[in-house]
Length: 325
Image (cartoon, rainbow, N blue to C red):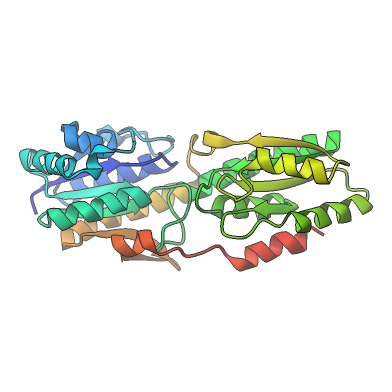
């Protein structure tokens, strides 16, 4: 292993990526390595967009959302030619170890790259708001995304109560419903629609009818964007036909869940995992994601982290049903 370590962010940005970058850079310096930042993920690795990083390079960024290195997805890295160019860049810059901050696609790409170029070391940090990676209780950015969604729902509930409306609030989660489920419990929503469970409009109507009989004139339903109903707008259309008593509105929160200052939980998680990532590279680890389970920091092979779905917590699903009474 050379004395140079590269770090990059890939895929969608998530709050806490800058905190992770700061931790990686300063831990690398502490251990005597030279950290290099790679701009725009795998595309930057292919094109050679690298820069040396110092302690001052990452000063004052722990509280900032997004990533100073920029993130993004790379279609070129999916090709053997693209990966060959990326390897040539590493050889040219004398870098033999990488910290990849991202999610499912990032780690799949890293695993493929290592199968072709095993002389490179790569460890990953789970930087995704979706919380859908096996091998960690929390991903960097998830807590912030949930808190942003809950704050938005709290504001919408005020309007729902004042105007006597039913709001369907769509949160991010194309393939996983973790944000939706946690937001639903934390905001006291009457129902939640997520990809992991069948959408039962009959059950939702029963909940709304029960509330109506108690003179309840407003409700909130949280919808993950990847739910089989097709999102909040389509779900609202179906409910208007079946429950005309409510004035129904659909709100799509979208990318506001990605931006803004990370919560203390995400800052601490990112700082801890970033430091451990460099320490594990120093010890020779590769082809694995750094995560935390039950308070312990663990390594999970990339192949396992991206193929295994931990599933949503059935207790939280039950709570949404019970507490909607």
